[in-house]
Amino acid sequence: MITIKQKLISIIVLTSCMVLVLTGAAMVFFDYYKFKKSHEKELKILSEVIGSNSVAAIDFNDAATAKEILLMLRAVPHVDRAALYASDGQVLAKYQREESLLDWDPPKVSDPEPEFVDQYLSVYRPIVIGDRKIGHIFLRADLATEKSQWNRYLMILLGVMIFSLFIALYVGTKLQNTITEPVRNLVRAATNVTHDKDYSIRVNEQGAREIQELVLAFNTMLDRVAQREKERDLAEVQLKQHRDHLEELVQERTAELEASNKELEAFSYSVSHDLRAPLRSIHGFCQMLLEDYADNLDRNGLDYLQRVQTSALNMGQLIEDLLQLARITRSDFHKQQLDISSLAQETINKLRQQNPEREIEIRLQNNVYAEGDQHLLSVALDNLLENAWKYTGKTPHPRIEFGSQHSSNGHDTYFVKDNGVGFDMKYADKIFLAFQRLHSKEDFPGTGVGLATVERVIDRHGGKIWAESEIGKGTIIYFTLN
Image (cartoon, rainbow, N blue to C red; front, side):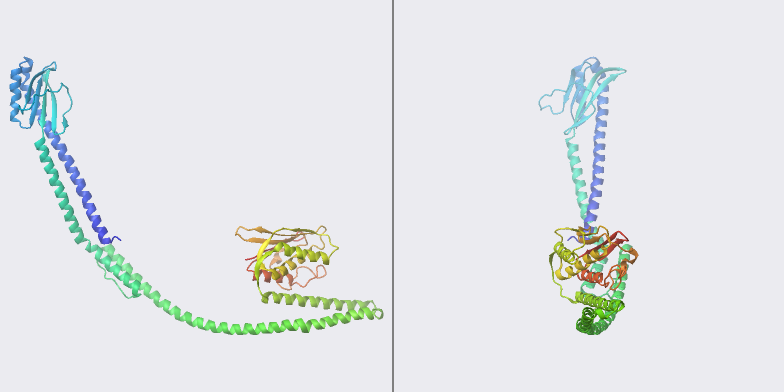
């Protein structure tokens, strides 16, 4: 991992390197341009001087004089080739510094700009008298010596740049301590705080203004963390006290709940045995009176006796519904994959056997599956379908539907739908409460416990249940299972 010290040194060296390279490149470009222009200017002046002195020789086609004039170039060491041309472009005279070399052929006459080729600078100049061009002069300079000097200059410049980089590296190494030392102190303090959880550590404010602000923020953070640690310790102490107190309350409530469960079991036993037995006796004696002494009773007596018998039967049914509601909460729960369509069909078959005279349209969706307790879901479907069967009793063309639909949340929603009497939705929050009835007993008999039992079953499955209805148009009961 690269440290901030290494990064700072790298930044300093790279910045210095870029500045030196750009500065050196600018200097080299400028000096090269100056070197080139100065030699071009020198050759142009020299060509003008030689050309002016050669006017008579060219005009009279005097090759010997022209050659003597070119020999004057011996005084200019770096000019190694020269030529004078007549007006028709023919070479009148030529010059070659190294006479030991092979004879050379001057180039054809042209008027190009001065050009550098390798180490040579070539210049062509016309020789003019008034408005008349009488010939040309060609000069070539050998700049090998100047080029070697130029190379030495570049080497010196490169050496200065390398030396400057070492100086920058040395200075950067020394100066970076003013930045990195406070940062390292900050890192050491943060590491100690992390490992030792000692929030009393503080860092001295030193270095640049930004570093001081960073150190101040770090110290302030430690102050706040230390304060929060104190508050957390206090809160943990208080939480432990509350937890201990809560455990005592839980034990008390558990004991109370166990006592309540025992009382509920005793009550259930009493209802199951002590209350139903007298009701059976009342119903039995009423039946005996009706069978054996009906002739001794007038119409009012028979009516009273039948009312007592009916009340006993209703009371027995209410007791049975209450016991079933209690058993729903306390019964064992065994979750498994179930064919809900088959359970619904079983309930419909029982209702048809109990009421063979009713003609009712049944629509059961096939292959509806769910995970749940078979006994509890059978109880729930019994109550839902019995309610639909009951509340379509006065509908001309009754219809009951059961099925499921896939919801956007990924769970299936099951429904029981009928076209019965329906109810006002402002009472929807009461239909799943025990003993809450929205219709009179005379119109639709019942104990008001069925939907409360269904709600308990769905709650044990971790699902939800709700209703949608409209008076005279029927009811839809929706439920989900988790």
